[in-house]
Picture 1 (cartoon, rainbow, N blue to C red):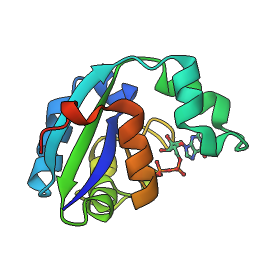
Picture 2 (picture 1 turned 30 degrees about the horizontal axis):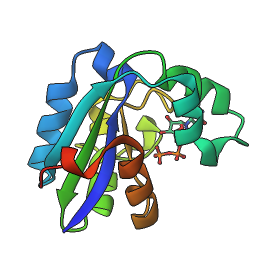
Picture 3 (picture 1 turned 135 degrees about the vertical axis):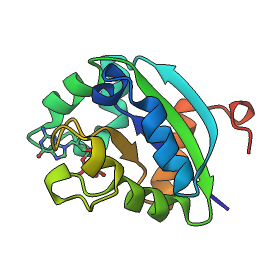
Picture 4 (picture 1 turned 180 degrees about the vertical axis):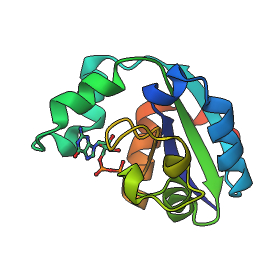
Length: 138
Ligand code: GDP
């Protein structure tokens, strides 16, 4: 079994589609083993997205991710990391496959509704960023 970190982003919480996204996650065979709704501070967002700090859209990304509540989650499945990336669809919703979360719900390349860890190493880092082990019930 593998774990990955998911974030339901502010564009989705604002439109009250957390439940719809969770249905797509569960239908894909991913089990939601931890979940909480939080508001990220600017400092937390800068740290979380630290790998992107040289990219031109970094300030916009920090502004967006702190613009409203997010739902952070730990998902578990066999090959959870790649399974969730496939379930999310491409970063740009215009390029996302039909049936993916971003194709169905994302507003733009920035407001693209969900985040999912992109490697085993980052999944562990990102899960530890938001959760204590006792909050995760597999
Ligand atoms: P992901 O792994 O599919 O989420 O994509 P990346 O790691 O490349 O980018 C992280 C996040 O930054 C994306 O999910 C978007 O919210 C945002 N992002 C990516 N590319 C762009 C862009 O060209 N412009 C803006 N404004 N945001 C972007």
